[in-house]
Length: 478
Ligand code: AMP
Ligand code: ZN
Image 1: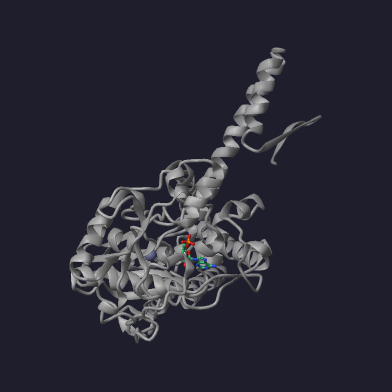
Image 2: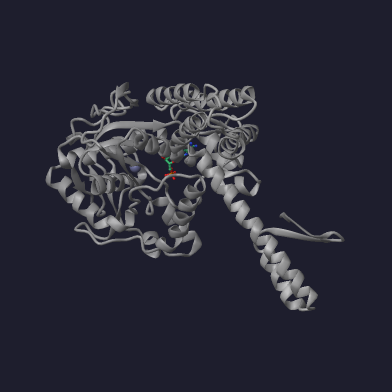
């Protein structure tokens, strides 16, 4: 069956085929690592993950590249405020992002280039644009892109240049520009940049690359001149992606990205996310409140990437229940249901086939995840009903059909993967705590109070609270 995706470039639902199958060259705009990513960012990154996993499920070999924006106004300002050098300031946020990705079961990216590791290539790129008459140097040593010289400007966003604003100089910050629409490729160094080590040499003097340029150079550097697919949040369509096209196609003379996908911004309790509303939750905020990674993943994945998604704590509880149903069925199929050679298959192979067909039809339709999730949870209900009706042993072939369908769908949803990893970690932790409690008991029996206290601290460091009662020591998560 054919995967169809809404291509922002053609503004239509187009059949997707990579240019050179089985390879699929995909690039997504990544996080600006100036602070911890919030659940809005992760709505977008989980949409990337669903796309990544589904391309693989369809039998292709996606190479998904994501960038780290580790130099821009926000990262520089953050480093300056913290009195740190730029890289020292951004590195921990990059690590935290990767940790959150692991927690949420986001599949590893093929590569995650950091902008600051590729400045030389960016300088080279600007020289190419200069040679083609697409870039000019301003008096202060900054270099701008000359939009009027690129005929196709506006193909993605519809913001076509008519030149009427040309030569006006209204932006106080960028008074050096020939045309207000022109954007910066190279920013001449300021003292604040020097202070945090955010300066590089170039033929135009010391400075740093512009944000738009990062994505053109990093994506093409990793994947080649033409990407099969470029994805990002809806806020990036203009001017960021329009400018990426101008820089890339201006230099290479060939199509930059065949498909453009844009994810809709997450709302929280019906409102736009904003610092002032205090609703920019991070993944750690949710885990600290006792929510499970699998429930967070379920909620953030639950609406199609172009549809409105409203994050609520009630919704998160609903997601936790949904995940529990999946785990319960997994147990029922793997551990609880007896089989016998002559037992009936309870119609399970047919139920599994139907569910898989619904799943694929849903995702083929522009990654319509609601439809695909309906197929998954339909499988859960129908299988449970069939097992209840059978009331005893079921043929192995019946159970296997559902197990395989469930595992296949979970290659894309990743919900069982995350939930089972969590419960395995829980089991490991429980075994460790029990063992430590026994060791502490032994130390106390020997009146080795120092050792007993040491063990208590060791347990406490994992967030476990001990309570000594007449019946023995009880433990709980703090
Ligand atoms: P940033 O770290 O600000 O560069 O953003 C990283 C990615 O998250 C970009 O693709 C943004 O479009 C996306 N993003 C930012 N805010 C939200 C939101 N509220 N909902 C969904 N995606 C978002
Ligand atoms: Zn980008």
